[in-house]
Length: 197
Image (cartoon, rainbow, N blue to C red; front, side):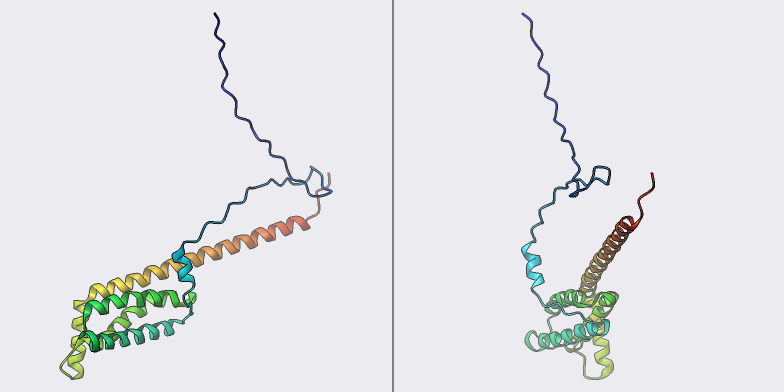
């Protein structure tokens, strides 16, 4: 008996048919249908962050904000917790993040600079010292040296947030420029006379 071999089925190719404008001819430029992507769902964390206040501080304003908040937090830490450096360091991290988030895009470079200054200002109430200016200054310098990990951590947080914001801003500008150039090229093509055959 003969056995017949079955051929594997060939995949069917879809023909791409151009969409013609009403009253248009097939001689012009062809436009093809492109399937639109469904929008990506937004994570709930991002939705919660979008509900927070979004002020835009200048470079000086962000520095004053960070210094004032850290001075108040340092004073509260000295009154309530007897100057706990761990609590002060933990409170410094969100202040650093907010400073980098709330500074306006033109002054993004100031956030990592203002944050260490604010850390030093807030250390004045919890650093101690015997009472004179020199004694307090030495206590602040010593506290800065001993708690440098918190200082570096907060500065790193502010630097990373400012860098990410700057990269996203540059990407948006590039996309807007590319869209404007594409629109100008399309307008130039529409306005150009057809070549004579």
